[in-house]
Image (cartoon, rainbow, N blue to C red):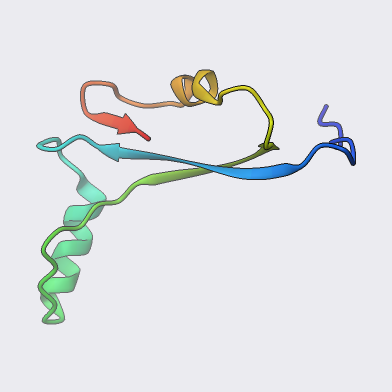
Length: 80
């Protein structure tokens, strides 16, 4: 059950991104790069993060435990 925050709590939206590590395959980014090349664009780099937006009180304790629990593949992905 999700309860509304108290009016005294100031809400903030925290952004957590999960990227492929350098050198690890990123199939979505590779597909975008191919499509861009097909229409004549030449991007220097394409990355495709998964983005999580978490609404929590701005005075909430660190979101590190939440970030650490996200579904990731540690050898191939990193989150920030």
